[in-house]
Length: 341
Ligand code: GCU
Image (cartoon, rainbow, N blue to C red):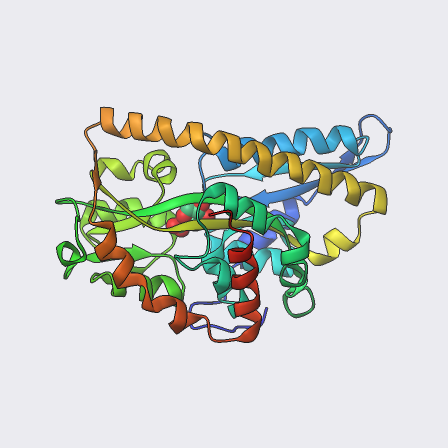
């Protein structure tokens, strides 16, 4: 893969890659058609309770049926196949077929993805989903990494609104974050975002956050309620402050050769079952958010409203700072035009 960012570090995939090849992006005895089943391996960094695991697992169940057993999906949760920067490389190399990666990761390969990572681009989860799964808006963007990186984007799953959470006290204004080390995803935009709200950004992989909070390497992090709860971050950072600084976006990516190797019939089935997947995910998202708030509250976490105007004002310069290319502006404008607000 081409290294286009200081965040992209070629991972040490040797052993992992070998063991994956050994256990196989497998073909096995097929089901209905009596032929072979190609099992697509999908890397995920969430737990089995997370809406992404549930809806992607169900994607596989439906795909087996609608391809008469020719394709199945096996989801590997909990960063079993590596952190997102690693699994992005593994998909590019064709060692793993598919992965869920955050927009922050794709930003490191093409600056165009920044358009959908900005704080002001989406008004709601519904608005976001109507944009990121609309091929008229996303067609060129989603195929733009095929030639350079052998990565194709299938579509988007919401991360919901992201907020700050901290170890010692709520952050009601940016001033409350002064001097605090806040973990961010590995991207220039996320670094700038946390700097803009007055804190000190510390880039790190998702799976390292719990221990880093616990040991005091960081003072806080930012995420949605669902990951906050399912990753148990509330145990070590009990002050969740509703900064709602942006609506985050995950992408399902697939190795381009794998996608191109599907027959038209199987590709049509794959696309249809993907639609069912993001729809189910969106429905589950609301319920999982409520459950996460209830669960974390019962365990002693607090959820605090903040001075939203102060945070909005602090973040305002980011759009002009990061939206510098006509191709990015085109995507941003298309997203804004789809707003019903
Ligand atoms: C969310 C998102 C993940 C991402 C994580 C993070 O949980 O769904 O894809 O990795 O945030 O902050 O790293």
